Length: 431
Figure 1: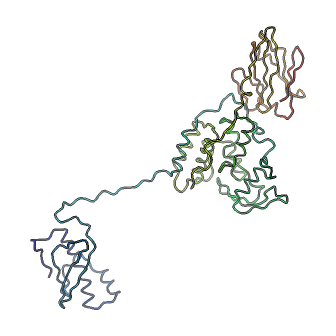
Figure 2: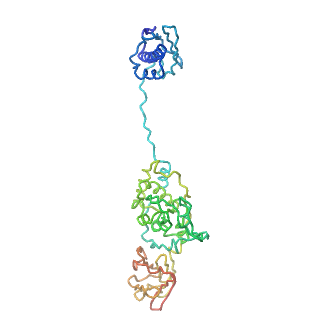
Figure 3: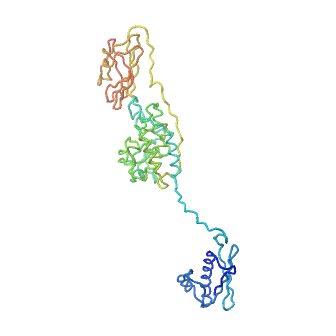
C-alpha cells in the first residue's frame, strides 16, 4: 500500500507525480512477475490508465511519498521478493516546492513579413520619380531606338536577338550553317508558361517597352543612349516570350497589363522597378500604386530567389541641341529662315532673324516631292528673334512656340528634305 508523506500530506503537484511514478512501477512490476513479452508490455501500456492507479496488487510494489530531489530523480520501490527497482525520471519541469503556481506564457503567433527582395524593391520604388509623360515630348519613332532592327554590337555576326535566344534556352541551341542565327532551342515563356522550341515562334520582349521608355523620359536622350537601352543585356531586361504574349502586352505599364500567370506577377513587378530605376525613368501615379500593391503581396514562393543583379543606374546623354534654339535678331525687316529639320523628332523649326515682326501668310512648308504641304500664315506673325517648332506624327503635341501640323509622319524617310517657300524664294534643309 502506498504511504502518505512524512511531512503531513503531499501537495497536489507531488501527488500527481507520485501517481505517474506508481503507474510506471505497475508496468515494471507486472513484467517482473509475469515474464511478459515486448508485445504484452506494449498492450499493457496501451490499456493502463496511469491516473487511476494507486498500487500494483500483483507485485505489491511499495512507493515512498518523499518528493524526489535532484536533477535526475531516482524513485526507489521494493517488491515482495525484496527486489529493489530504481526508476530514474527526467528532470522535473515543475517549479520548486512552495513556489507560486503561474500560468504558462501565452502562445505567440509568428507572422513572417514580405521577402527581403520585396522590401528592397519597395524601397527602390520610392526613389523612382512619379510624373506624367511630358506633353511637349516628340513622338516615339522606333528607328531612333532600333535603327535597322536588332544590331550586332560586338561584331561577331550574332545580333542581340540571337544572343538572348542562345543565353535563355534551357537546352543547347542549334545554329544556322554560318553560326550567326539560332534555329532551335527550348524556351518557357515566363509570363504564360508556354514552351517554345523554334526561333521563329519566339519573340524578344523589352521588359520596359520602348514606347513606354520614350514616354517615361527616354525621349530626351541621344540616339546612342536609346540604342543602349534597346539592347540592355542586364538580367531581366530582355525576355524570350511567345508572340501572343508580346502582342497582348504591347507598350502597356503594370497598371494596364500583368502576365497571365498569377505566379509571375511578383517577379515581373520587381524587375520592372529595377529597370525603371536603372535607367532613371519615371512612373505614373497609377503605375507606382499598382507596382507597390503587387510587390507588397509577394510571398516566399513567388518572389525571385536572388536580389537585384543589375547596376543601380546607367549613364545616358541628353543633347542640348534638340531642346532650344537661340536666334539673335539683327536690325532691319523681318527675315524668316529655316533652322532645323529632325526626322527622329518629326519637327521643323523656323525663326525670324530680323528686327521686325514677320508675317507668315506668304510662306508654305512642304517635304521632298511636295507630298505633304501646309501654309504657315495660320501660325503667324513671328516676333523678332522668335522660333516656331512645327510638329507632325501620331503623338504630336502643342506647347509654347510649338504647333501641330498633322498627326501623321512626314519627315521619317531617310534623306528627306524640308522646303520653306516664301517671297524670297525656296530654302531647303536635310532631315
